[in-house]
Length: 384
Image (cartoon, one colour):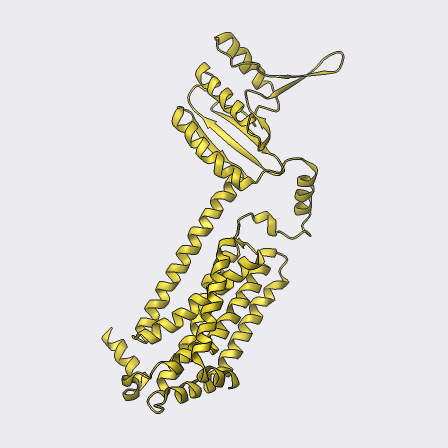
């Protein structure tokens, strides 16, 4: 009850504090990061994950991009020239460690003195004899066959190994328009794939899904509140708690440098579903008491006296459930549990301060004094 006494005495102070805190968290949104890489959250106790990390430490490249090339008559002089030019352009890119292409693959053959390593081409083949010789050498290369050229000769492949210092995300952002330009200039079809490319599109999907889930969740909650309360107070206060809880949680993640991942993208909708419940309980109880208590401060105090303990207990048990996800060995699941629990705590704080502050500040609607809330709710349902 002590916190309620503070709130009803100076409601504007608590409302102003919430506004300031929200503004602070909004400034952190510019630092929000996305981490769609599913391998980053795998536990080190998995042998394959340890081997994967060890290989990344040993070899000077951390990622690769694969460009598939499909077209009719790949061994025509025109198409071989285009593949040659694409390969040269990629080799000149300072962010690339190595390019392996059908036009620059190394051939290894044994001799009496040892072995000889030579490039398969020193220039694009043009005559039928040169193309026949090139094709024969390519199909007798164990490195090229099945990797850089399909066995049915319908596809070429270019493997692009990135330098360890190269930011894979920035590289993909730059290579996608380049591949689109090559596709427009040629009748060949270039297909971009590889882990960095998949990560790029997963990141875009995460952003789209978060926006869709958030706006869809708000829409459902709005309709629910509209059906239940059918007034601005009953709609805007719970919606405010929902939105503020999500903003505070995401702002905290951004401030701490914790990125959103494939697991935590569902966190906002979880917080929304939990945050709205306490506000609905409080406002419903407020409306039920409004017929007998006329003073807004006394009405708010009576409402919170009855609701403080239930709201606190339900929030604490919910937080404990999400914190229990900390026993998971997957880092992204642990992050989901910790920050969802934090979001529930923020919703608890807002339900115990922000909501009663507004209830104590705003006058009691006259019709609430004249009509029992249950009767009003029944009438609202009938009208729908």
